Amino acid sequence: MKPILHSERLVLKVLDESNAADVLEFVLRNKEFLEPWEPKRSEEYYTLDYQADLLAKEYSQFRKRELYKLWMFRKEEPDQVIGSLTLSNIVYGVFQSCHLGYRIDQSAQGRGFMTEAVAAVADYAFYELGLHRIEANIMPRNKASLKVAEKVGFYHEGVALNFLRINGVWEDHIHMVLRNERIE
Image (cartoon, rainbow, N blue to C red; front, side, top):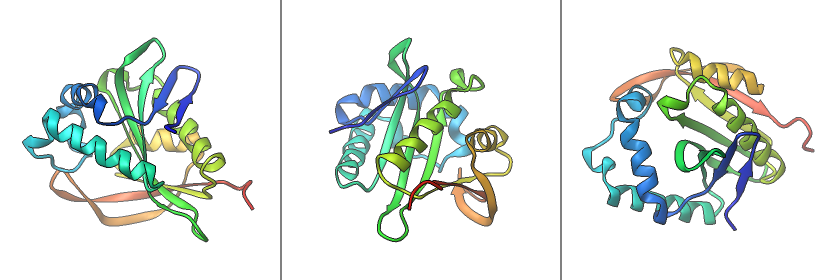
């Protein structure tokens, strides 16, 4: 069953290939805005077929409990995607950890939506998935993203030099961590 998370102003849900047009609209609308923060994208990425294939792959990973990509909608506008949050590299067993990535629509930034969404997804990761640790790697110049993580309670655990290739350049990242201290 696909999870649907609700917060005060948002609905977060797993999508599949049937939602490719909505996701493509989000991707196209935010192409220039997201470019400095994401991997270099091919032109094919900005097509309906590519987004449908990507959503199908992500849904398959979701069914295997390997990846949880939740798409963000405002309750006031339930048909327009305004962001996504991804729990990836999920490891169970003794590690019980994952990585968190997130992105938001340019028109929705600065209104606390992402902070609200990250808090909801962290609760889901801890209390539904039983994870102990969420790691977010954020470029030092991405002040807005760092602020979101800090507001939710993530702490700075170190810096990874030349960690991820973002928009064609190897970028340093601050390693931010949130731990579930209530899990035994």
